[in-house]
Length: 107
Length: 126
Image (cartoon, rainbow over all chains, first blue to last red; front, side, top):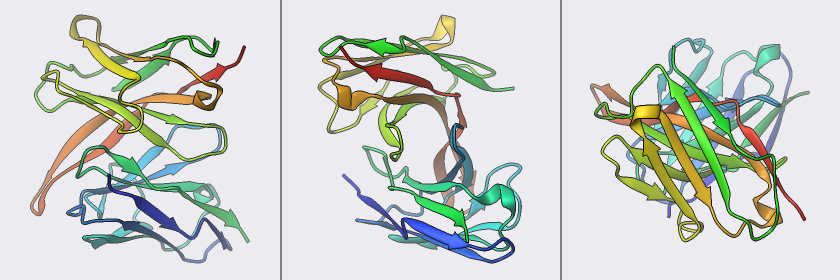
């Protein structure tokens, strides 16, 4: 089973600043990596698939990068609505697995 | 418009079997490439993938829970059903169903859960 490790667990950022979230896979996932955003009381929302392609309707301030086992989600200029928990997920091998999440909070 | 909605009991007793239904619209599970999955989230904790069923009835399960899970589909009703046996208080969670979509890019093909249901909270308690 591929273990997904996200860091940091919590990221304190001021509005307008850049946020950089990391996700590491225990073995290569061939860029079959997705990022989700989850706000309190809501279902997750797909942000990025294929490590770097934004899903439909996702603002350009969200970008994904990386390959193999190391991936990054960058939010270029945090807006108030971006404070949430972010999860990465590998879809390359069974069983599918999620990371533990990174909470982006207001500094 | 694609939607998914979970339904099932809000409260189950320890050792009982949980049956959850995902009713969806806007796509057909008889279409090649379509898949529906279940994911759960204990209060305050991370997402945990549980099971997935393909359009061709191929099924996959979480390694740690596979002996307790069964996923099935009723294409005519646009429903996917998840059963989990021998429920325990640690299974208390919000259970989500989600559609998995394949994306074809020049660099390859990729998967992701593009549409999620609102989730249903299940509490396990005597």
